[in-house]
Length: 470
Image (cartoon, rainbow, N blue to C red; front, side):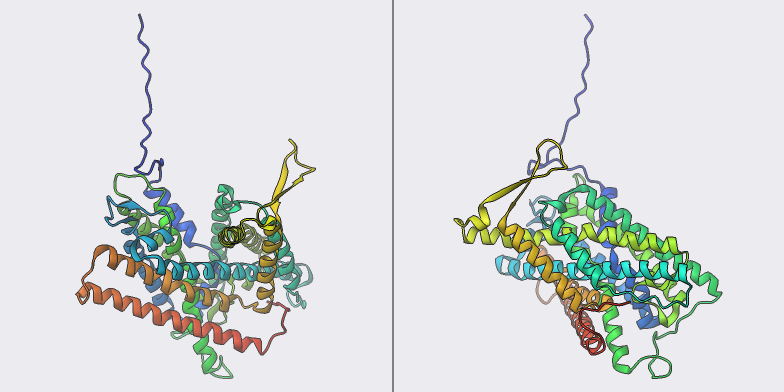
């Protein structure tokens, strides 16, 4: 008799019953796509505010701090032991395990503030990109001296209406296609921005810029106060571009072992942040060399030709942010809807589900929703759009977001959790060094926040509310 040999593939199940297949390379890819986003568009302007000396130092300094705190956070994925302890699946779980419920509330407030603020920033950025497309096409077909002025108010309203519709779909943030599209689009507009900046620099036959950035003086630059606010705001812009810590634990939760997850994640963070830093320094410095102290707040708005390539980049921004908006919005919706449903368990407003048959979809499929979802999500997106219309300041909003996120989420919680996890002795050299990093990051965040808010206040005196222009 012939004996048939059947090979069985053994699937290794982790200690929590899940199957993980992530490697250092998949984690590196996730890290790069998590870091690179619309904040990259403000880097040439940020370097221009600080000049050739402080600009590159700020880019590399923020990268190093982000990497170092990522190393600390990686050791907190399992508690109390970084190799054999209990897994924590989210950033909030780590805070709960290491610091307790009180810090969870503080962390939650910071996270949701960042989520909502990013929604505001994405609304403004989308309108800016659509206006850039309209202006670029106008200059191409009517001449570069044509008066091509467009308002972003209508574009913000249309974007808000689109997001109202998308907000009614459940778990949209979990769709893999959104992550794939976001990665492709962010790489598209980032590399187009770098290519166009390099081409402009080559055509100039010389690098522009000064050691200390934008000059002070009525004839050659800006006022001393504006220079100060913009320089501080630029720090916030750079910090926002390196936003990573919030997603690190979720990425680490996809990694298989052995080797232990913290070892793999440290390598992935090194490779991911390393690649991102090289790209950021390249775009920031080449963009500054190309435009000099007159670098635009959004680098893509500084180009008119080739108009089709500029349009591709700006449309990629819009496509990216349409989906990314929901990634940030859905956790907020889930949070307040869960709380309200528990608060009023007998209310049909929160619990009764309505079904509307979709006429163009086969199989008798229907859209299901509650009145709570329909009314409150619509109101929330509408309120976010109104705030965006009132504060249409791309760089100032990004700077404020970076300031809010940098200290608490990138530095304070990772440092404090690591001290608790590793039982670092108070008063030891390591404890003093970590606390010095904590205090230094707090000062940087406060200064960036002050600079961004001061710039908003200053600009509000010279703009018309609900009229957004490039």
